Amino acid sequence: MFNLTVLHMMKINVRYIASMAVLVALPAVAQDINTAYFDEGFLYQHSLNPAAGNEQNYIALPIIGNMNIKMMGDFGYNDVVRKNPLYPAMSDKKMTSFLNPYLNDALDGFNTGDNRISGQAKVAVLSAGFKGLGGYNTLELNVRAKINGVIPYELLRMACDLKNEHYDIGTVRADGIAFSELAFGHSRDINDKLRLGAKLKLLLGIGNASLKMDNVQADLNANDSWTVAADAESHVSMKGFEYESGTKEYDIRPGEYQYVRDVNVHNGGLDGIGLAADLGLIYKINEQWSLRGALLDLGFINWKHDFYAKNTAESFNFNGFHDVSMKKHDDENLEAQTDRYVDQMADFAHLVDQGDQGGRTTGIGATLNVGASYTLPSYKPLSFGLLATQRINGDYSWTEGRLSANVTPNNWFDAALSFSVSSFAASLGWMVNFHPKGFNFFVGMDQLLGKCSKELIPLNSNASISMGCNIVW
Image 1 (tube, helix red, strand yellow):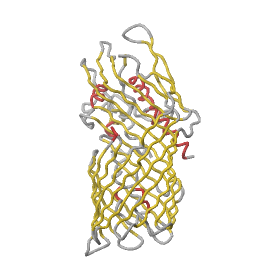
Image 2 (tube, rainbow, N blue to C red):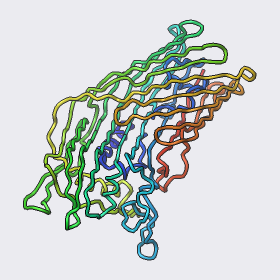
Image 3 (cartoon, rainbow, N blue to C red):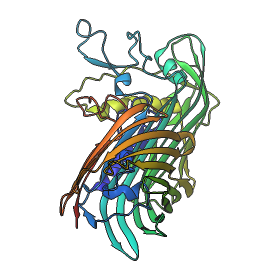
Image 4 (cartoon, one colour):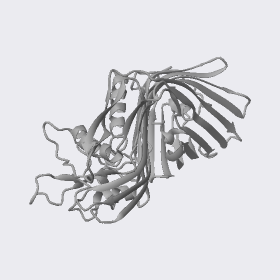
C-alpha cells in the first residue's frame, strides 16, 4: 500500500517537476531530526550517526516507528497563494496566485536571485535494534523520497510581467527521487574513547525524474505571446512510465510542433538497484567533551530506464503564464488546480519525447554531520551540542549549523531544544522523548510547523515534524 502511494507521488512529481513555484507547499514525506543528534536516549540516533549505540533493544511499530517530514525553501505557500485583491467586490474568489495581475506586491516573497525548495522523506516500514556481535546492531526497511527545485527570479518576473523587454532567465532545474532501502548497521567500542559504526544499504529504486533548462531567454511578442529559447532536457527512470505528446500550431509562423504535454505511469514497480553506506565515529575526549562525525548516504542507484525528452527547437512560441483560481470547487481539488499550472509549465519547457535511452546511474545525495558536545560537570543530565551539517548534492547542496541543549532529568524522559541557521532560514527546533519500561514515544521538529492552509499545507516552506512509537526492552 505504501509503495503504491510513493509511486503515485512520483507520478505527480514527474508531471510538475518543472513547476516548483506552484508546488512549494506540497511536501515530500526526510532525514531524521537533527535536534536529537546529541540525545543519548533517542532510539534512532544511529540514523544520524551509525556509530551511536543504545542501551535498549527495540522494535518499531510498522510504519509509525519513525516518520519524518521535512521541507526547506526560500519561499512558501503564502508567497504563491495570495488573497485576491478583487474579492468580494469584483470576484467571488477569495484566494488567487502570485500571477494575479492586480497584485501590487506579487514578487515580494521571492529572492531576487535563485529561489530554492527542498523536501526530503523517510518512513521506517520496519526497524529493529539489538545488542550483540560485540556491539550494537540495527536492521531497517525504509521508504524515502526527495524533491528539489531551483527557480530563477527572472522566470517569476517574466510570469508576472507583460513588458516589452528581453528576459535573461538563466537556469531552471528540478529533481525528484523515491526509493526503498534495506539497511544493516553495526557499531562498537574500539577502546574507552573511540567508537566506530557503519551501515550497508541495499537501495531499490522506485523512480527518478530530473529537468534542467539552461540559457533560458524570453522576449514578448506584439500579440502578448512569448518567443522562448532554451536548452532543456528531462530524464525519467520509472517502470511503466511514458510521455504523452501533443501538437500545437505556431502563432508567429505556419506549421505545427510537437511537445510533451503530460505523462502517464502504468502499473509501476521497481526500476533500479544500488548500494549506499553510512560511516560514523564518536570520540570522547574526557568526561565533559566528545566529538562526533558521520558521512551518510554515500551511494548510487543504477536505473533500468532513461526516458529522455529535450527541446529540439532553437526557439518556440509560448502564450504566457495565467492565474489559476484557488477556489476549491466540488469537481476540482487542489491537485486538479495544480495540474492546470503543470500544463502551462509543460508548454513552457517545450520538450519533445526522444524515447528510452537505456539505463543510467544517479547518486542519492550525501550528508556530512560533524559536531561536538559538552556536558556540564556540575549537572551531568544537561549537555550542549554544536552540529554542522553539509548536504552534498550538486546544485541542491545546502549547509546548516545547529546549537542544541539536551536534558535527561530521569531514566524515562529526555528533551532537546535547538536553534539553527541554514542556507534557507533561521529556525527553532525541539524534541521530547518518552521511554518508560517497554515503550518509547518521541515527537519533535527541526523547524516549527507554524500555520497551515485548509489543505494542511504549511504556509512557511521551512517546516518539519518527526515522530515514532517503538517497543523497547
